[in-house]
Image (cartoon, rainbow, N blue to C red; front, side, top):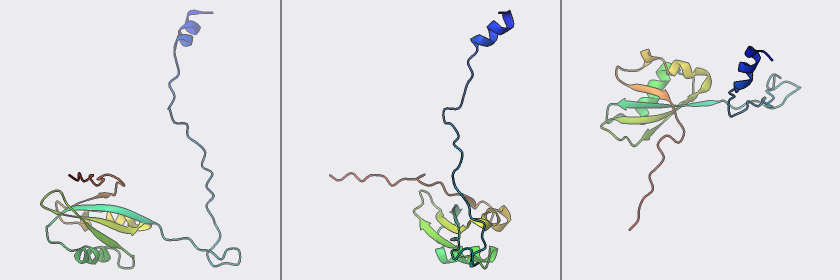
Length: 129
């Protein structure tokens, strides 16, 4: 055994803890409504967090603004309890047009929008005494 082989034997290969499993999901390719398939896929939704909006802004105003961006989409907005002096909303938009809603030119200066993080702000437990 030469010196180079001895040095290689002393090294340990580092591996990621999680092994990547091959996906076993099959995605259909048949046209909806064809004779091969009587089923059709549901529209995928994407959730966004809109915040630092002026206090007093209503969900109706937010939905109206969303319709200006993509008028044919079914969008919704849910008002959230903000921790500061601003309004905050959870938006539901079609996943296929998510990038259109994320463009900064569609939003007023200093209004923030980002992808929704599920479980980010969990409700605090109430202490009953």
